[in-house]
Length: 268
Image (cartoon, rainbow, N blue to C red; front, side, top):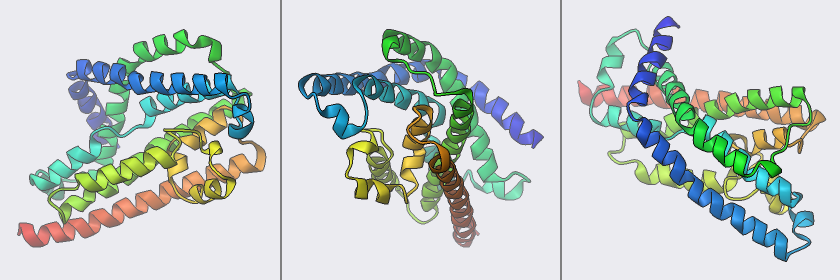
């Protein structure tokens, strides 16, 4: 494990060279966020029954999007899938077939180093944003809920990474995978609760979505923090999230093994 901690250190140094890029990306990410906040504030101002339909008060809805920004900072996969695809396409993957380094764990270490660097750059603008909307800030129901939220946040990051890793493995067979990545991103953006809370959907459709991994990539940890899920429902959701992490990990391993065999066949 020591070598992977060293990878995190090296990755952190490399990522901090692009701190201006991280800062710029964070600032621009607030533009659509402000647009969504303005939209929902208008909806609640013009429609007195909006809270009954969505299950969120006006303050809770504003805070929901604040939490979306926070969860994204801690868990989002930015360019890892593109970098993995480039390693495969350009042949850089060959060195990992000859060294005692597990490529999946190597990329996971780089993913966490990237998150640490991004958090360090995003902390100030994110803190300013939360301060500007501090009247909407809500604390979790209790300390235990916050601990479970943090655990779910780690599982969310792992789930996002393993799915992205598995998608990047398509580069063993295809020269260009950007279309597949964009399709996955678009579906994840809708089905994970980025665009709107899943509570606004019809109950039957919401139940179908919770069979899929996408709600556990954002919406579920937010539900935990806001106290929207508790008791048996909370532990059932945590078990389902753990199951999807294991499934995604297994699928990533499967795609890697099949891809390496294909790569060896053509790489000599």
